[in-house]
Length: 317
Image (tube, one colour):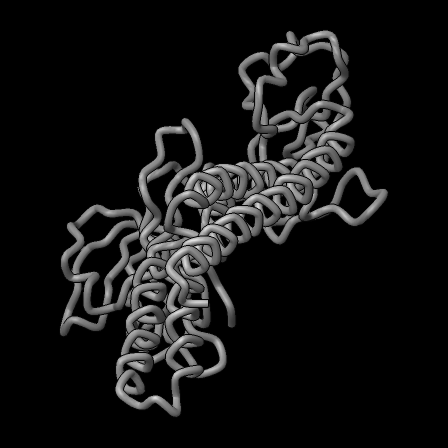
């Protein structure tokens, strides 16, 4: 069966078995074939760094008491429950340092920071591509019959490095900034939708796997729930006069929703027009994404024209 479990590192045996201690249970986790991530620290300002995927043999360097999230199949072996990976469904193991109630949102926020084009591998890839083309050009340099190939290879050398050479380099920096904003708005959109993940469209309540009734109530003023966290990113709490939706466990004996026994269930308030805000974040996401790519391509075109001008001046073409 598929389960999730949170706790702290107790010990690692044989380099492959991680023992995780929860509130009232210690369970072994087989790290072989598991997908392990290290969630970076984040102070709440700006966008956090992307989660780092680490190999299971690096986990031995982590200290005890580090918090761990495990999700996957649990099997009974030697009268003991074990988390074990299978070929089709590897375990997901996440090491983190934030409160459990903030883990889901932190993961969403951090996972949206990765840039599909520009990341830690990009400079290495650009260097390898340029070096390979230089090698091809050098191999045919002393063969007059392959003069066209040499010219084509030399021109192609500039293709991988076009985004990182002046004068178009300025537009690459602008691209990275715009792409960062695009990912930020995408994360904001996902965080706004997070409290609705248990509810079907049009429903105001549902029953969780814990047996609790989850949903939301409408409140007119923020004074009724001033100590409740705002689930939307931004300064929505300053708009006190607007209507709010209060998400949590609904109890007939309580006037306000309560926290679930499941720490991953959303508890807090959203502005009543949060759906409109999610559409706005989506629109900003796509606008910034398109603008960022246009900016990057514009810088590449400028560099191409600049290189052609130099080659014309040198009489190469």
